[in-house]
Image (cartoon, rainbow, N blue to C red):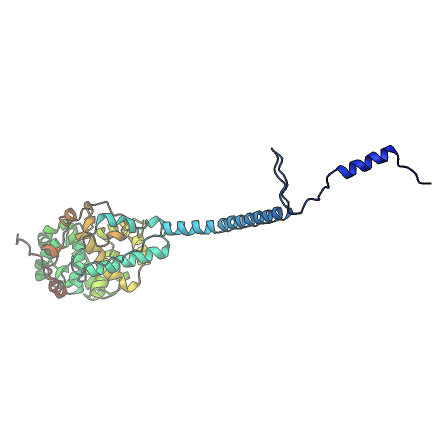
Length: 371
C-alpha cells in the first residue's frame, strides 16, 4: 500500500521547484568590492612584487657597499692631489751676472734647514756652490802675489783690513824687500812706515819680520808646503795656511774668514761659531777637491751680494736655496743698488788680476793714491 507524502515533505518539494537555480561563480569573475575594504591581491602578483622589492633592496645594498669601499680611496686620491707639490722649476744662475729673482716665488721653494735630512743638506749645499760657480766663473784669491812668500805676507797683512788696501800697500814692500832674507834684516821703523796704511802696522811689522826670520832659520828661506809647518810661522793660523796651501801649492783647503762664517750660518750649513769647527763641518759637505774653489765662491758672494748689514736678497741668484731669504732687501730694483759687483762698473780688489778675470770684463783696482 502506497504511502502518501506528509504535509511537510510536500511543502519542501514545492519550495525547491519554485526557487531559481544557483550558478557557481566562474574563476575569472570579478569579485565585488565592499566599500572601505581593499580587494585581496592575487597570490602570483604578491610573489612577483615581493621578489622585485627584494632585488631592489639587494641592488641598493650592493651600491652602498661599493660606495663605502671606494669612497676612502677616492678621498685619499683627492687629498694626495691637493697635497702634491707643484713641480719645481730648476733655477739656473746666469753665467756672468747676478740674477734678479722674484720675491714672490722664492719662499715657496725653500725648505727650512732645521727639517732637512743630512742628504738634503749636502745636495742643497753643493747646488749653491754650483750656482755660485756660474755667477763667478773667474773667482780667485783677491790678494796680489807672485810667489808663496808674497802670498803668506799679504795674507798676514789682510787681517782687520781689506784685500784692496793690502794690494795697494805690498808693491812698495816687496820692491824694497823681495825675499825673506831681506825682510828679516830690515829696519822695523822703515817697515812700519810702509805698512801704516794697513792698520795695526806695528803688530803686523813684527809678524811679517818674525815669519821671515823663521823661514830663513828653519826652512832655508822657502815657504813650507805643509799645514803643520805653516802654522808654526808667526801670525799664521789655519785660515792663512789654507790660503797659501790652496793658492800657492794647489793643495785643497777651506778659508774660514768673516764672510765665509757669515754665509754658511745664513745658509744653515752649520751652526758652529768656532772657525775650526766651521771648517770641519763645511768640509764634510763637499769633496776635498772642491774646498779651495768653494772658499773663493763663498767669499766673493759675501763681498758682492750677501753683505753683512744689507744683503741684496732680491738680486741674489741663490735666493730660492737660502733659508735666510728676506733678511735683506727683496725688491729686485732696490736690491740691484746694493750690489758691490765689478760687472756693474766697480773694480775688483787686485791691481794685477788674473787674465780670466779681465777677459770676463773685470777691472783692476787702482793703485794707492790714485783716487
